[in-house]
Image (cartoon, rainbow, N blue to C red; front, top):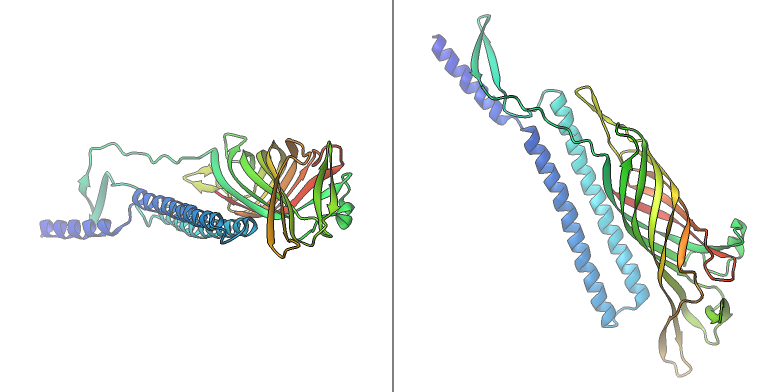
Length: 350
């Protein structure tokens, strides 16, 4: 009778353990899913950008339309990655909670016992050493950064000069794409980090009142164009190296009495600056000629812009999305007191 009971208990217990999830396997599945989400959207973005470039080469669209389409597509895929990865992170959080509640196993047990008629009977006892699961507390993480917004200038460092700016406020834009590293200052979990990386910035300025930029030796000024302009835009491209001190107020996790770092789960504040180089400057003019031809004119020159760029920047964000401000301390044009100001939003995809 006892032997039959032992066999029944063994069979029922084996079935129970076979139905339980394995913690390491589930973590691996979630990690693979996150990788697949990121890879799929990055591949889709590359294909979409190639298609836009082909349309631009075949003159189906102009440069302005191409830039707008690229930023729209990049914003869409960045948002999709954030939404889908967030869902997987929620699954991982629930998985950790289930493990802490004893609803999930972490590895094959060395032994288990059952009680029959107040007697403990060992069903199985392994002779292997129990492995301790190592929790990887990353001190440095990486992020893909996408930012966009409004671009304009200040005269003599005066914020009120925006009211009399020679550039259109809502039509002058900036776009930034970059990659950052985020390193915790202390070895133990804390809220303070050093964030640094590299980014590429496209600054666009659209003058008011049918004006365009003209260079005279060492000075660049705005003048009225002789024909009505449909488009007047000065674009300068920069390679920047941003550096910020970031305060991340995400709640850290606690497992087996140990505190582990978690980031990008709550409010974040960043203060710092940047330095870099101007890679190129172009002026785009679109107008109708005297013969009623649509003309798209591209002018390549330095327009007396300073090559070295440096300034201050800050951001306030919740999870991956935040408000972003950057201000150039260097003069936009040589022999002038004009400095670039950018206001917008940014996504930090962790």
